[in-house]
Amino acid sequence: MLALKERLIIVSEKTHFGFESVDENIKAKKVKNVFESVAKRYDLMNSLMSGGFHKVWKRYFAKILTSKNNSKILDLASGTGDICIELANQNKDFKIYHTDINIKMLEQGQRKIIDHGKIVSSLVCDAEKIPFPTNYFDCVTIAFGLRNITRKEKALSEMLRVLSPGGKLVILEFSKIWSPLSKIYDNFSFNLIPKLGKVFANDEKSYQYLVESIRVHPDQKKLKAMMEKEGFEKVSFLNLSGGIVAIHQGYKF
Ligand SMILES: C[S@@+](CC[C@H](N)C(=O)[O-])C[C@H]1O[C@@H](n2cnc3c(N)ncnc32)[C@H](O)[C@@H]1O
Image (cartoon, rainbow, N blue to C red; front, side, top):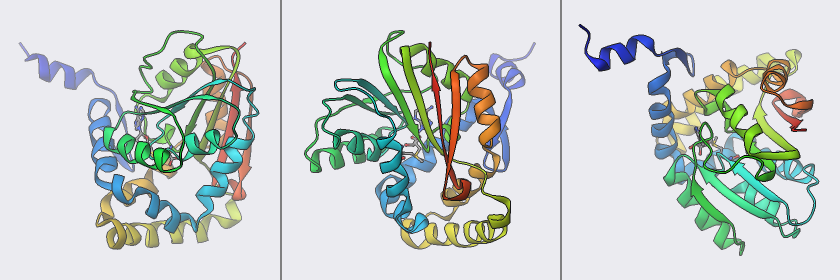
């Protein structure tokens, strides 16, 4: 007779942690370790790695939401809160929820949001099990978060559930770059980013994970198909910076 723990390991599915294949039930722990390790240097590293471009992508992302005044917006995997700050800056009296599974990232974000003079609720929230009622939000946003989630389909179906009819999900995520640029991009990311991580965050491994996780994340068309499969309608995507990142949108009707 197998012990319960052994039986659980046997039934667990495999998933990616970067290029590594791991049991689904340990990926979340590994991702948690990555973000606990980088939380304090997360913003600095983003600016260094993207040459400041992450701010431009995030600002654009927040701009195209075009949500009406007073909308209730759930930002998942918010980390250090850039999207919440961009949304709050629109002065449309949005009720914004700054959420993440990782309390260290939330703490960094909460501090930054207060420094920007904004009032936003922060709470721990696993995107695979969203602690809000069905049909609650006008909009759900997630920036650079989906890639890190173990069961992406489960998270997408939760996002659909908490959206009210007519509401929309907007995803900003690394995606597949235009192929003529892929060699330069690969050289830059595989050679330079882990080194930047080593020098500025004292953590080469986490940034190696970051680079690898981008390569194993579904590309533009696959993610669109995943959203449609989970029940989103009128799904579309828009490439930014030659497909380094893409914005996907889908509605609940
Ligand atoms: C790359 S950061 C993105 C932070 C922020 N949205 C940004 O654009 O800068 C990814 C975040 O996803 C969070 N995360 C990972 N798995 C999660 C899950 N299942 N539910 C909610 N957040 C999760 C991590 O803790 C981390 O803060």
